[in-house]
Length: 291
Image (cartoon, one colour):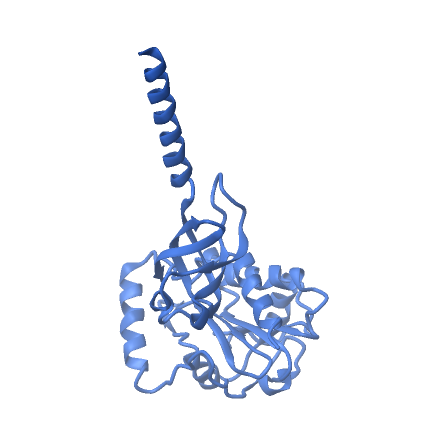
């Protein structure tokens, strides 16, 4: 009897261990999509760190059905479940939209939504894969910069203004570019160009613009802080879905960081601020590595 009980107990322990091991193969994850290959049912994601499981890293995942990748594109923030079957990592229950910032002012968020709806009738937002129209603005060194001059280089571009009071908005987006510049310092100015377009051109110009760029130690050969006539900036911003307007002396604005490939086509448009500098760097590195 004892022998039978021993075998039953040992069997139950083995079963529990197998169940526990299976449970350890399933983890909730978040990250930014780098590449999508629907034909081969795979995607590459810059994953955020998962406590007790893995550091932040770039990883490929399979999906059981190509339909799971429908609508996904580089730059999309996602949350999903990692499941390991055999030696393959699968992404399950994929939900897009995790890079969008949580607005602290609900009324401003509502106004922003209404403004976006209104602008859709007058401003065409550039889709991923489309050519980005050329523009010409002035940088912190007083030089006229044409986007067309960047042909053959990858461009990372965002928006901001020097008097932005919220450190989670303009400061965070500029800090992202600063860390990207450090990560790709050898390629910056050669294979990669950084751009911040100022949305308060009446204030951010001349010496003020140069001083703000100096805060970020921005070399104008690597990182351009651009200003120009307000109507031109509004038109450029609208093409990327970036909306801004003045309320009580301050600017309310959406948050966009875009990546343009070597052919001058939009490679990704990240909305919000809920992504890490590493994820942005992984995305830029992925675009830079494309032939």
